[in-house]
Length: 180
Length: 102
Image (cartoon, rainbow over the protein chains, first blue to last red):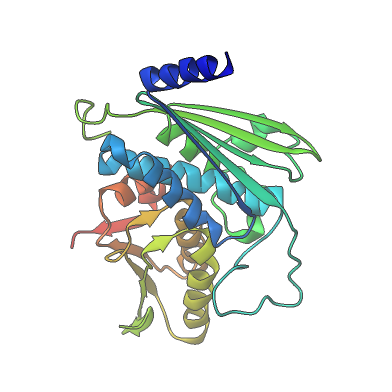
């Protein structure tokens, strides 16, 4: 009985062309490039255009960077190779979870942290708004995620963490105008 | 070639392959060291090697622009590919940065 159910599930997976991956990594800045390259590799078999790939990489990079520097407040530079962490810099332990589902041509990306959360999500999503002006961040993170992906959803509980959901339909790059 | 170089009154900054938050403080600190120490009027960002940039790049350029614009300096970008130019346009940065061809 169980074997049959499993077989049914597997057939369903094959029919719906579903693929899923999940990685959990430390909230340090050297993992930002790892995260975006991982997602890019995950969608490679769809033969995405270079444009689609850089869109996805930029959006993932923004979400993961936000989790690291705002969620866990691990600010500049920690994780650089061959460099000691300055003594004044506190490293907050924490993990970022990156979860991707590919269903036919639809990519879903979830970036979750258990950091300090966002008090006012609408405010945070305004372009140019940043809570850390001293870091010379542009405040464009959420605006970029919104622009480069098709859909964006942000859930957050202050003190508990933040969860960013993004969707992007793949393989529709060619016939949409090259110039935006 | 050095990542940071002062030629005449121009600071040339060679941007790394990936411009993100991880690399941002290295670029900003390196550029500011020369901005303060040398007689720099304009800053040129060279994107020849750059294959990836996110909003951290905007922050880096805006920060340098703020430092030199009050003395009448300009910020230029060279070798910016289509994706980077798109990010410049989306963020409104093309109003303060002059994109030079080639």
